[in-house]
Length: 153
Image 1: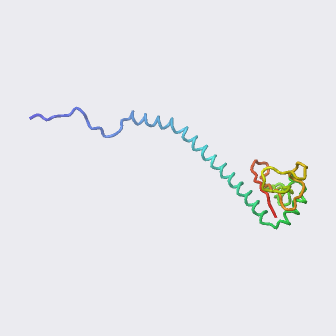
Image 2: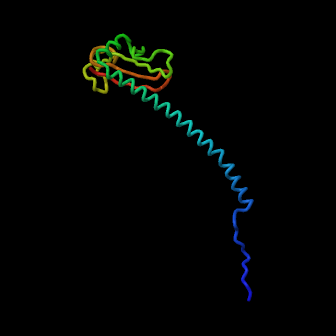
Image 3: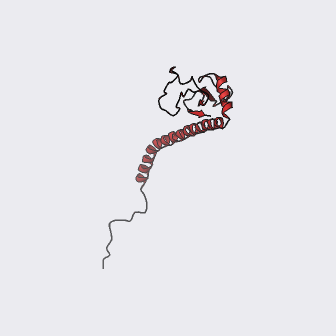
């Protein structure tokens, strides 16, 4: 009786050439993968800093809005205009300095209109009857981040 002998052998693992090809492919693919991971980590750090700064601005704005209107009004009058930092700003030289700008705001007769009716005919929203409305801007010094709102009595 003859035994059937298969001419195909059962392979027990990878050949040396297959291992070398796999290592070569991995070596080529790892450089772009590491670059992508690095830029992702840098982007996360930048985003974290921007979010922290944004919440610092929100915090300062809410602190000012919580103060009595008379105090804010007197600080706006001392500042004089919307381009001079008010007394609510951080001291000079501080890192991530928050600047607070306050100005008297001329709402003329209706502060809720989109277009200023300009009843005092001066064409300037920062003049006229300003006893009931103030403009508030908080910004991070040397940054494009800022928030603005109007405060009413």
